[in-house]
Length: 233
Ligand SMILES: [Zn+2]
Image (tube, rainbow, N blue to C red):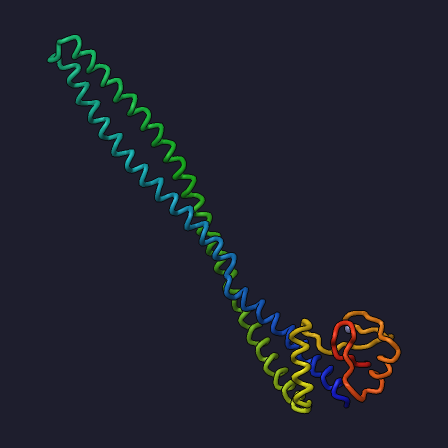
């Protein structure tokens, strides 16, 4: 076997290993992402935080409303006690009582609005909690599939790697260095097949003389366009 033929066969191993590496990376990425579960968890956290905020505001406003009602009771008692007779004092007391009552009305509208929003949020939190349970259950199934896939891919890779290294042991070290260097710089393909006089990597039509040298197989010939080693399949 000429060295370029050996290198071409080695490249078949390496390209298969590249495909396996790609699949292993995909599986690992998906395993790390927990994508759907995380998405639902984030929405749930957001809605719960919002609900807490509204509940706190509701509580504060309720206390304020209670204070206003107490104030209103005191003012009304004063107003109807008959103790205040001065017309100016009386009218200012009336004004204040009216003012406090208006504030109470406003508070009650606002409390009602807050209660409606809190109800909506509680419903949405409930829905999200259900959704989270479903997503978690689905994820457990997917995770176990992915873990099985990762194990089998890793075993496949180990086995292929062993065969590849056994094969590589037959190849001259300097040829090997040249091959590795080309594979790194040429996007994984160091050896290009020649078919119908064309370099299959860059589609350049090889000059006859060049083609003759590739055919003789006595030395490694590089494509004059893409620089890859040429191999006549
Ligand atoms: Zn080429």
